[in-house]
Structures are given as structure tokens and as C-alpha cells.
Amino acid sequence: MATRWALNSLRYFVPSPPPRGKLLYYTKRTLQLCGLVWCIEHWFFDLRLCVGASMLPTMRCEPTLALALMYPSLLRPPSLKLGDLVVARSPTHPRKEVCKRVIGLPGDTVCVDPIGAVRGHGGWEDAKGGKEHVVVPRGHVWLAGDNMSASVDSRMFGPVSLGLVRGKIVFRIWPNWGPLGNTFHELDIDPDV
Amino acid sequence: MSFYYSFLRSRFRLRPIIDTLAWVPFGIMFTQVGYSVINIKGNSMQPTFNPESSLRKDMVLLNRFVAWWDVTQLKRGDVITLRDPTNPDLLITKRILALEGDLVRTLPPYPDTYVRIPPSHAWVEGDEPFRSSDSNHFGPVSLSLVDARVEAILWPLDRMRVLHGAWQAAAEEREGKRGDELERLIAEVGKRPGRQYAIFWKEMERARGRMQRVYVHGGMEGVGKQVLRQGRR
Image (tube, rainbow over all chains, first blue to last red; front, side):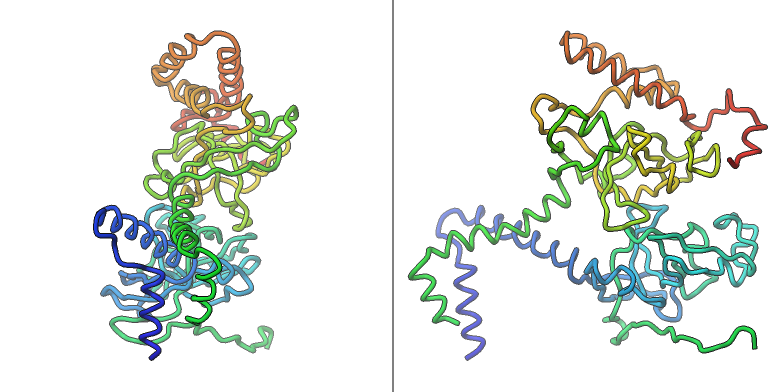
């Protein structure tokens, strides 16, 4: 009953093509569908293919299909939390998008290079490996890949403006089905003890 | 639900409304991906936009193809809209003065006197230096933040024109190119004497003056090593 009602409503909203002028009709419908799909994938949710070893072990080297939420309000602090996986436009390659984890929000103090991977390799501000700390400026976030030894991230190109952050990854669809959330916990440690 | 449909159908002609609404997502996509028209707010790009003599905000045509298709097509002297790096929900309109590899002599409050633009970045400034929060505040911006290029002023009608010519020609001059752009523009504008000619040359002078602070491709003539080493203000 419900499906019949749904099909009937659909037939009202999307009637059958006219007997003549089918090409024009199908062109029109294709353009309208493209517009609708574009709006959904730009402002609601999108499926992203993530490739590369920079997010091991969260994501494997093979292409991984993930669901990303694109609402702009979700991508700004305070909705954007420390430890969220985000998709951002690369500051160094405008046509590429990178998938990294948010390690620092605006105003946080971040250690640039905990493992000394970019020491002497011309990393961002020539990081000294382990000791250098930086305060993330207003409107920017610090991104880092989970696999720090094989990731091009904020250690190389510095803090990333929030305007470049495009979406937040919440679910992995293929090859393993499961949520990809925020794994950070607040540590209750007294640094002086 | 079908009761409501038949009720509405009997009262209004729904078909044309639905047919129009079906085009709305496509229209939205076109304005974000193709061309769009917006109002310019603020005074940071005077006298190009919103000069003191104008009572209304300027309406301009934006070309968004450039931002997602090939952002390297942008040239020095283009007016662009971009997302403010410090406030991602704000769209600002500035002019590109320098691209990657260039050396720029900055204005206060930027801490370094000279800065070399990193790869895939640009130095943007407003035409009105006193009221503009631009690269002198937040440094070189990534080309990925560019939203669109401003192609033309559409309104008011007495200042309607395509924004292309003088600044790009001045930048080419600065680069040391033979000035093909300038010669072509002189040949074109020279055919239309009067106001167009005067506007073009006034803009050309302003552009030349502004580009004095940009050393395209980092040419160091005139910049002493001493000054560069001292760097900080």
C-alpha cells in the first residue's frame, strides 16, 4: 500500500515523457538531477573514496569508501571536535582533497612534529622534531594523519584554514562496514604530578 | 496525502509550480559552479568598487569556473573573492598582487618586511590600503581558498565595465615581459577616446604604483641583502 502510494506520488511529480520531444525531456531531467545531486553532495552528505597510507590503521591503503557529512555548521568549532576525521582541500594542491584528523582547534597549542619525521627535510617552519610547539591561529585547524611517518599534513603545510575543510567523515562503507568516529578521550592528568 | 494533492490540484495549477521548482537545485548549482552575481559590501576595494561618490553597493559578475576547474589561470592583477582565512564564513573581495615565487615588500602590520610567496599561494590586497584587512594581516593565502574571479561590474550602469586590462598589463610590465597586453589594450582603448581612455590610464598609473612593491619571480635588484637579513619590523 505504501509503495503504491509512493509510486503514484512519484508519477505525479515526475510524469512520463511526452510522445514527441523525448530528447529535450531527457536532457532537462538529466540537468535537474545533476543539480539535485550536486546540492546534496555539497551541503548534505557525500561518498568519498580515500586512498593512501597516511591514515593507517584507521583506513587501509586500498581505496576505502566513506560517508562524509558536509553541513557547514558541523565543520566549525564547537561542533568540530578534536579527533574528528575531516576531508579538506589541500592548501598546496587546489584540486586535491586530503583526509586527515583534527589535532588542534583554533587557539590550541600543538606540538609540530612529535616523532621528528620532518626534521631537516624542510618541513613547516623547519620543525625541530619533538620540541617545537605552535599556537593554532584563529580560524585555522591543525591536521595530522594517523600514520605520521607517511603523511603530508600540517607538519608540512602549516595550519589549515577552516574555509578549506569540506566535510566530516562519519562512516566507512567498504571494505569494512562500520562507524569512523572520534577516538579521542580527555585525559585527566595533572602535568605537575 | 493524496487527498491533499487532489485538493490542491483542484484549487491551484500545481504542475507549473513543480516544473519551476525542479530547476531550483540546478540554478543553485550553476551559481556556485558557473557564474553568479553578488553585491560588494565595504570600502576595502575603493575606488574600484563602492567609491565614495556612489550611493549604492556595486553588483558584480563572478566567474566560479576558475576556482574549481583550474585555479592556476588566475593572474596578478585579478580581483578575486575568497574565504577569509581567519573567518571561514566570510567572503572577502581582494586583488591578487603576487603569485608563487614572487617577493613582496609588505606593509604594516605584517611582521616581516619582505616575504616570498610559497607554492600555490597568493598575496592579496585591497585597493584601499587603510581600510582593508588583507595579506598584510594574514599573510599569503592558499589558492584553494579562492571562491571566484570578479569579471565585471554590472551595476551601477555608469560604472559598468569589464574588470580586465590595466592591472594585468602593469603586472606584465613588472614581470619584464614585452608588454603585449599593454600594446593590445592601447590599440583597443585608443580607438575610444574620452572617458574610457582617461579611466584606463588612471587605472594604469595606480596599478603601476601599487606593483612597485612586488618583485615578480623574486628579482632582487634594488633590495639590499642587509635589509633582507634584518627582515623583522
